[in-house]
Figure (cartoon, helix red, strand yellow):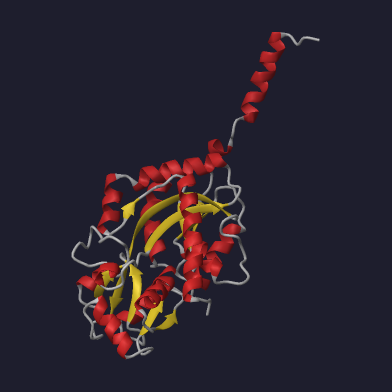
Length: 325
C-alpha cells in the first residue's frame, strides 16, 4: 500500500519541530549557578568573576558565583557532579579536583572523567615560585642549596592536599632532591597571606593574579616560573627548568565543566558565548596582563586535554608518593 505524497509531507511537517532540540531555545530562563571550587579570592574565583559578567549579558540571565572551597576541590566538584544536567549548575575549576585528587583519594564521590561534560578551557599560564623576603635566597639555586643544608626546616604552604600547587611543589622537591615540609591550607588566599606574614610558612607556588602586586610591593620574592618557557608577562624571570631543575614543567589552567549528560545544544551555546567573551579585546588584554593566555578551546579539545592531564598527574602522584593528608 502506497502512502500518498501529501500525507508523507504532512507527517514530516508535523514531526520536524518536535524532533528539533528545544533546550537552547528555552534555556536559560533563570539565573545560572557557577560553582567555584575555591574560597572567594582564589584564582579560579578571580578568573570566573572576570568572565561571568560578559556571559550574563550575552545570555540574558545572571551567572552567580557559588564558592565551595575545601577538601582540595572535592566539595564543589561533587556538588556539580550530582546536579541536574539542565544548564543551571556549572563548574569553574582548575586542575586539582579533576586531574590530581582522583589519584590521591581512595574513595572518590565522583568519577572525574565520566561525571562531567567539558565546556571549555578558559585560560592557561604558569605558577610562580615565591618566598617571604626574609628567606635568605634570591634564586632557585639558592633555595635548593638552603633546603639541602637544612632539610625539612623550610615550610611551604599549599591550597590543600592534592591542590595543583601542592603537586607542583612535590614534583619540584622530587626533581631537585630536597626536603621541604608541606603545610596544607583550605585554600590559596590564606596560604598566601601566611607566607606574606611569615606565619610559619616561608614559600609557596601560586598563580599570578593574587600575588603579583605583593611581588611588586616587595612583600614576596619571586624566584622562578613553573612553565617550560618564560612568561611573556615576566620575561626577565627564569623558568625553574633553566634555573636549576632541568625538565621541570607545570602549568595552571582554568576551565568550565558541566554535569554529565548536559544537552549538547546547551553546551554548544555556552561554549560559543564563552569564546566570544574570552576573546573580546578588553578581556583578552586583562588575561595577558595577569600572565595568562586566553584559550576558549572547544569541548572536544578540552576533553582531550583533561584526559591527557589526568594520565600525566597519575604518574606524577605515583612518582612523588603524594597522599591526601
